[in-house]
Image (cartoon, rainbow, N blue to C red; front, side):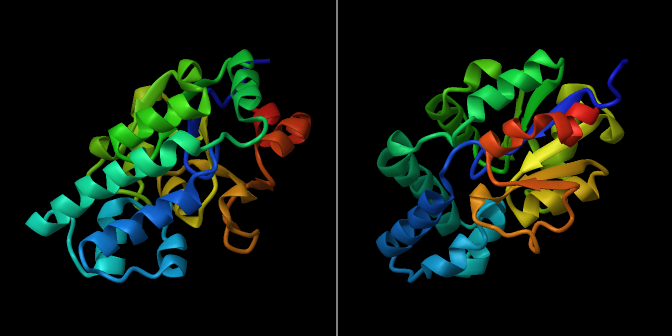
Length: 222
């Protein structure tokens, strides 16, 4: 039987690799360098949004301001230098993507991360070779929870909204995919609970849990 769903749109941070805490810490670190007190708990709850939305929320500075551009560049450097080399993929991440590939799905990244961060994350997670299409913050006018990046990933995957599923870990993934007309499967490993992921069509602990219950998941149903 031909599958109706032909593409899986993938978030990376907090979904396939354990990086949300480190992204939050990078915001705290860069704030300290620029003399701005960034509350870790506050910024941690915003991870999953694009930096263009996080920066004004926690620093009161727009990303396209001269100072904002410097902060953006430095935050990326801090994350890639201090934290990225130590990150680990969640259990079952590669095996899950291999299963999806074996089932004929096109895999397309839909992340609000910068292109430099995205490339580094895919490499660190050991999954770069499994991804068919990649879209980052540079491919979207607005970052999550706006739907732009999901729509860009759909275009790259040559799929209609009803032909795709999103795999994410934050309320912002659920909202962005929903606004793009794409069903979202959510994972708890990014730090959010079921109530916050309530718009998802299914919720699992992490990639290994999804893989263990794959036969009854939306991916198997196609």
